[in-house]
Image 1 (cartoon, one colour):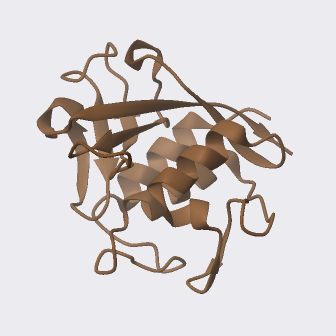
Image 2 (cartoon, rainbow, N blue to C red; image 1 turned 120 degrees about the vertical axis):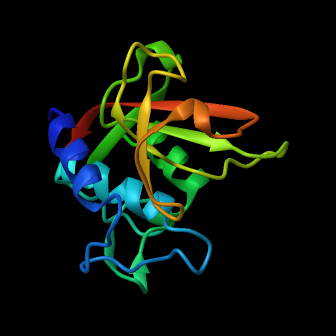
Length: 161
């Protein structure tokens, strides 16, 4: 299936400064960025993967896959998924498109910290790419305005059924 980038971006813009009441707000318990990114990806894919532990789904705050809210877990799910739901690849920043995710690492470590959603891919440079995110709510924020040590652009390639 085709990933609906326009739907993902429309969702990001609608909820960038608010919270969809269908989903728990994790802002005060570790951050809401990947929960928000997952909501946006779901808006563009329309399919969850209900595989226990290794899937990507949200039923309730207490019944969700780790990949729905965890930065590293979302990366692993998107880049290894061969079943239902969204699939992605790590790509060069110049190949990023609207509705994709750019994960950021804020300090030297093995873990990434943030999962903003691309709402305007611009010309593929940090100063032209605009993102939306939760925890520190933003919309149309230039990627270059973040202080990061490393980035991981994830391009959503398709959606498995």
